[in-house]
Length: 219
Image 1: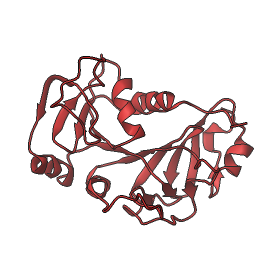
Image 2: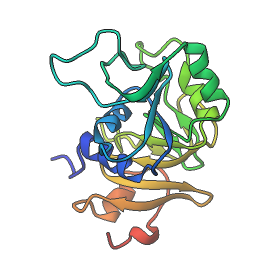
Image 3: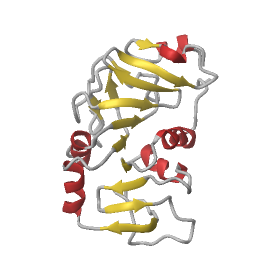
Image 4: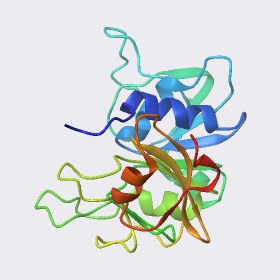
């Protein structure tokens, strides 16, 4: 039986709750796109997509899709009042110019020092190149990761050192998984919060590098 854990929507809600008011935030392809649906309507978080959107809203209701309005993952999105769309080059100028407060990315692996591997594995269907994640990892002020805690066969994704090709060195500061929220610090992985049904001993066993309990020891 699989260990208890948060759903992807619950993970997204935790990320959304932790984003401060007024931040400009890029959401990477995959699980991070769910964060757009979890941001409360009364909070100002300005979402950016590298294909040229600023002020992106949640997914549209079924039947209300605008075929011309998509995010970088080719998913239909909405645009908040005051939002804008623009040239791809202008979008990357925002990223490379350090104007994005936070980027939330998916990952294959994160090392205890914050190294990120999220673009290629040894599988035959690997992406042909690192893509925009490299620019986001280097240009955004902060990088948070959303990922399952382990692979389908139980292999840890939070590791001592990444085995897969790196996207960026030492950039990840926080990780949201289906089991826990973990900060990446100078001392390695530090537990910030965990699913109520997950014992700390089991969480440490499923993590491929030392996990320090921190203030979450009794969560």
